[in-house]
Length: 281
Image: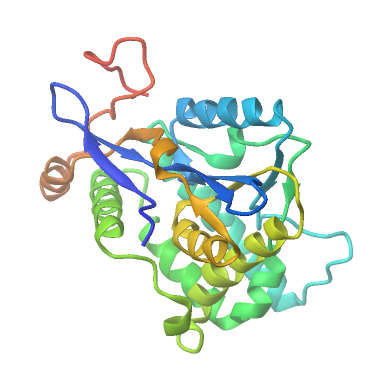
């Protein structure tokens, strides 16, 4: 499996950072180049600025850019009343996610990582709702929203959220994304959000002969790698880069603060002028 997430320790304080890869591919026969920019959907602004700089440099060399963005609606979309409710709840959930991640000083990817000349190749939210099923999407949104909702005065719950977020990142390194064959008839949410959208990305990428940048969430990288390899592309791991998303919140300290009903301490910012003495983001 192609690694799509990495956690390393970087400084004298033994802080851990999260990293996602930029992976170049080359077609064995034609020499055509595809660079897959795997992203975290939340990260420090400096992380997205670094990605944007690398992408812009490739654009200046003639690369076309394809990117994911399901948060999109076509003018002719006509959602039913039930679908409108799910879409509204989905928007609320995303706003809540952004609010909780802002406590780390992290921002949502589309806030920084965008360009008017990039080409969107993805499902829309409405298409996802219809393929997953309104009821299945509703249940997912309810579960996710509940995990992000608490009274404003219970600030100690944020410490638990940050601990769980850090645990999730560490688990992701050890547990690969599920294979398409195992989830096609079991989990419609995973099938659509991960596998169907990965196939859309690869189909669009292989339908053109331009040198290409693909900007997709990191969990799509294993599937993209498998599909591109089957189409004659080979990853160049010697030139793979791992930009830093930001510092990972500490698990033990945040768990302790949660149990003591104390809010988390201010989160340090990686992209600062003095990394030996980082300031809160």
